[in-house]
Image (cartoon, rainbow, N blue to C red; front, side, top):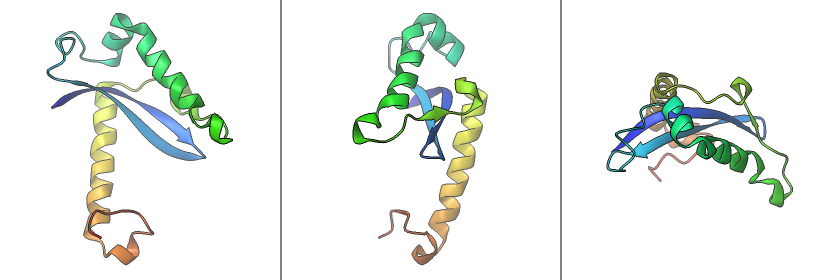
Length: 110
């Protein structure tokens, strides 16, 4: 089990790619971390480091730097949970369709 803390809205090649921040409920820091604000206060280098890694990680492959929506701001726990719910519903809808309608996306049924 994990506890969701927040999310980043990464723009990768013009497409939205959500990055969810979570902590294992068994982690010793889980009792202290309940939000992105807690994470940034307790471990300020973590969020910035992850954001920069995702910004730069495709550059060695000759791709452009990734950008972030919401001005690079990390979204709150509630916003991240809404993203998870929305994407889960989209995944369930995709899984309910015939594979030929999935547009080449992996549905786990093949």
